[in-house]
Image 1 (cartoon, rainbow, N blue to C red):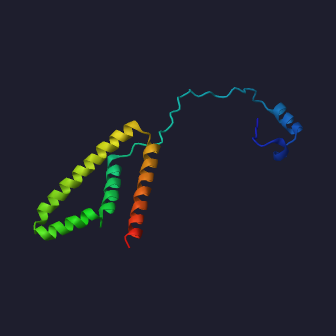
Image 2 (cartoon, rainbow, N blue to C red; image 1 turned 135 degrees about the vertical axis):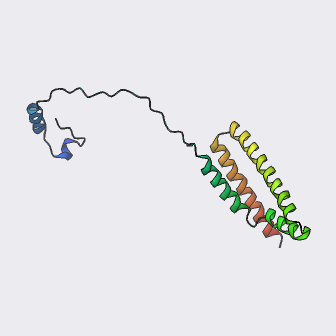
Length: 142
């Protein structure tokens, strides 16, 4: 037995042709094979990423964000002034680790209380406000 999903008018098959095909059919077992029912588990919107992917993404993002910012310039000037580059390196690395730890702890706390969409929208609004403040500062300082 042949079943098409197209309506009869579109497929070009008349009602008579279908009736003849049904009469000629020797297969009268119309019960479909039933597969065991398995629960469907929807994938979560946020798939768990490997630790290496998270590390790499974080490293590249922070590295690019820090190049040429005031922290790097301050470290450069302190190193040149103190003539102790390794001491400045250790001090600035400890400071960056501490601020990163605070960011991770605060981010974990916020993520446990707010939805990811709310955090994402809030971060976007905060970055927009900071950008507007920086533009305002540039335009009003002249």
